Length: 381
Image (cartoon, rainbow, N blue to C red):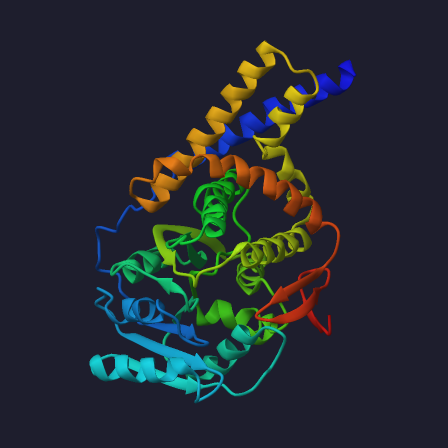
C-alpha cells in the first residue's frame, strides 16, 4: 500500500511538472504577433473544400475575400455536387467581389475514403500559383492572416506553415468541455512537443505549402485514404526535409451546435487517430493529467495534508488552463467555467482508455476502421 501511495504521489508531482512545462512554453510563444514588414507578398492559391452551409459558413468564407494582402490571390472553392447549398453562397460572394480571382469547381469524383482530400485532389490541376493554402470550411480568419502565414517562406528551408485554432462558439455545455481541450490544452501540448524536437506534423485549420513540396509527396493523391490528412501532409513534407513552422496568428473554428454524443464521438475519433499516428507519445500523454493523478494519490490515503496538496495541484491546473484559454482567445473568459477544466481531465481519462480499445470511428455519418499508419477503410457498422 505504501509503495502504491509513493507511486501515485510521484505521478501527481510529474503531472504537475508537465502542466507547468506546457504553460511555460505557451507563455514564451509569440502568440498574436503580427508581421511588420509587408513587402513579401508572393502570389498564392487558396483551396477551400466545402460541403453544405450553416449559420457561420458565409462569415468564414467571406473572411478570405477580404484579406489585406498586396500579392495576387486565387481562390478555388470545391464542392461535390452542383446542388450543394454552398454553391449559391459562393456565387453570391464572387458577384460581390468581382475583382477577386475566384472559381467554383464541381468535384464529382469520389477518389478515396477522405472526401475532403478527394475535393482537394480535383482542385489541384486548377492551381495557378506556387504558394498553396488549404483551409477547412468552418475556419474564419483575420484580415492579415495571409501576410503572416506566408512570411516564413522568406526562408527557403520552410516546407509548411500552419497555425493554431480555437473553438470560437462553444454554445453548449458539451462544446465548452471540448473548448477546454482545444483552447487550453491542445496548442500548449503542441508547443511542448516542439520544445523536444522539430514539428513533423501539421494542424489543418489553415496551412500553407508550395507546389514543389506538394508535388514532392505525390500531391493530394497521396493523402486520399487518410483521416488525419493535415497530420500526414506535414509529416510527409517533414520527412523530405521541409521545416514545419507555426505562425503566431490564430484562426477561429465555428461549429454547428453539438450535444454530448456529438462531442464524445468527435473526441474519440480524434483520440484514436492520434493514438494510431503516434502510439507511444499518446500512451504517455496520460501522465500530464494533473487532475487524475493528484486525485488518485489523495484517494490512496486521505488526510488533511494530502487534501491541501490536492487542492494546490488542482488550483495550479485550473489557473494554467484558464490562462492558456485567455491567451489563445485574446479576451477575458467567463469565470464560472473553471470547473470544466477538471471535468475535461476526468472525461479525457475515459477517452484515453477507449482510444486503445478499438480502431473504429464515425466520421461524416459513415463508419470507418483506421489502420496502422492512419489509413481509412469504410465499414458497414
